[in-house]
Amino acid sequence: MKEKWFFVCQQCGSRHSKWVGRCQECGEWNCVVEEREIAYSTKREAPSQSLSVPKPISELACETFTRVVSGLEEFDNILGGGLVPGSVILLGGEPGVGKSTLLLQAADHFAAHNKKILYVSGEESASQIALRAARLGIQQSNLFLVTETDLEIILSHVEKFSPDLLIVDSVQTVYSSQLESQPGSVGQLRNNAHQLISLAKSKTIASFLVGHVTKEGAIAGPKVLEHMVDVVLYFEGTSSQNYRLLRSIKNRFGSTNEVAVFEMGSDGMRGVRNPSEFFLSERPQNIPGSVIGGSLEGTRPILVEIQALVSPTSLSIPRRTSIGLDPNRVSLLVAILEKRGGFRLYDQDVYVNIAGGLRLTEPAMDLGVIAALISSHTGKAVPPDCVFFGEVGLGGEVRSIPKAEIRLKEAYRIGLRRAFVPKRVAKETKEKLPIELFPVEHVGELVDIT
Image (cartoon, rainbow, N blue to C red; front, side, top):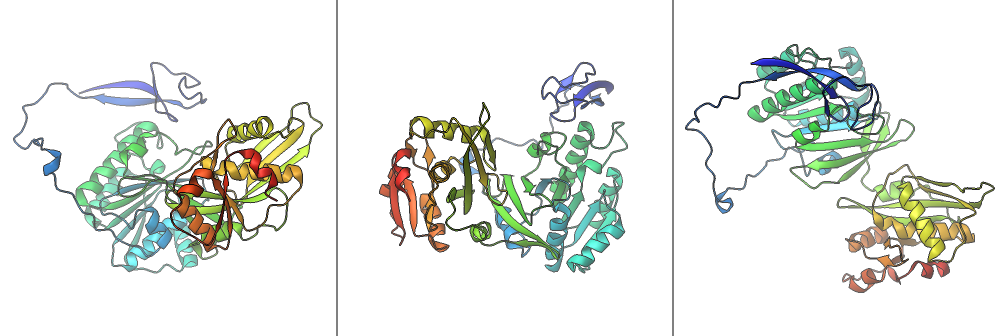
């Protein structure tokens, strides 16, 4: 067994032959650190008799999972219906967004179902967590806390304690004395996560690993953690907003791209069962530039308010600003509206916003953005009972989008009675809802919506 040293980027995990101030792969500064690698012998040993035997896929038995339900409906839904024993979940989010609060509440609910919980904290002291637990009203005797950062001690606690659920907050603070690199480095994260995951799988312990995020919004350190775990959840939101969005990026036991909405209160996180009503509750009436768009996050329809402001500019290059939508997509839609719709916007500043701070990437929001821009530019308000969804092509054509009926049901449920949809959607919609459909084939047809 030989040791050798190499240099690795803490942001993207790329290796370098020598130390550099700036990573050549991701472009970040001061992120390359020295790591130790242990090279094991390449001599192959004789195979044992317990090697697995390839079998036809048709003969393989399907494993069934008995999920553990916490009682936090939004939390259980985003996990795919509950927690799978032996699964490892990576939870990322900005500092102060509420990761520890949510996990402490979830741990309390699991403990109430006679599950033994071990909460390992490497960032906060026991007294700090006790104060939060008192504020949240948590008093379960099955919920145990230990403040520790040494990996070997944590593993010994898990071996002796044998919990049903393990929470490590956070994985960046855990270090192994067998490695000389600093806590939070790529080598430490890879080694520590591997050992925690191996122990969780061998003892069928469901585990949560909390991860910090970088300024770009990605889980700090390597993306390799996302490949090692079973579920990846991102907590979105800021301390200035009351709501939090829990987004599923990867889930081996359920649907991906699911979204759960929580509202932060003095007593902790509260699940929002009707996010459409929540995000539209403060929508102003009869204001030009405000329309309702029908988005779909995973399998959940969410109706949001799209706000647009078009105003004359004195600048040689007009502003194109968007919050909650891809700026490049908004600039593209503005160009389509100019070229295909005949609107003069080259001397106008354009601002587009998704009210509530949501970030949406679905092309189905295109038609709503176009309608909001037209409404603001003409000064005519869109009727408050209208919803828009559809993808807009470069030719100005309005293209079909998936799962239109789900969006229409959600629109009818909250009281909307008119829907501007792609022509194909209006033609192929089989379920008859008491909501009037207006087929739109080209963006120019939206001029007369008011």
